[in-house]
Length: 197
Image 1: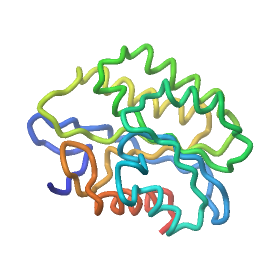
Image 2 (image 1 turned 120 degrees about the vertical axis):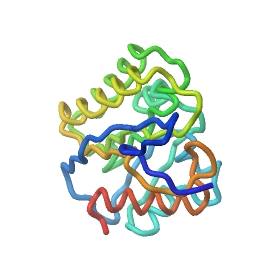
Image 3 (image 1 turned 90 degrees about the vertical axis):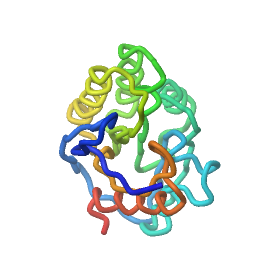
Image 4 (image 1 turned 90 degrees about the horizontal axis):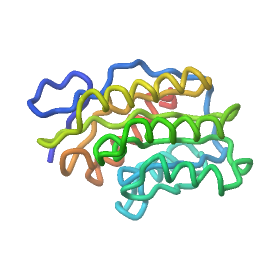
């Protein structure tokens, strides 16, 4: 267990993440509604208090968390097709880690990402880069870099806010998952990145 950050870590077998700067396109306000899509790092059922609960408590933003452990962008396609998007003011897309490390073809990951972005076009979206991964088993670095780059490029294309989560510093219980304290760390990092603290 320990606190690790991404981007510039030189540790052997460490996924360096990406070093794109955050892009803030809108200010977030309390008493608004946010839909959060994510994987096990975000899933309320995995932690006593996952980071979205901390985030909601500290910002006053009403959060609907539909994150599912193990999910990939294919599930986010289902979300944007089946949920009433007009019910929400903000959309958080925190994922891609499983796309990078589950052997999903890069072309499929990019197709799903672009589909979701197109469906959310014109909305206030926070597009979040995958976390850096500390592991002895890594997917080809070229695919990881390419997918992260495409997330960044789609944020620019659709005028979305972009947050580089591979720079987040948080306490981990394993190669990527936060501890309970780490969930609070992630919420704090998210608020800092969004200029909310």
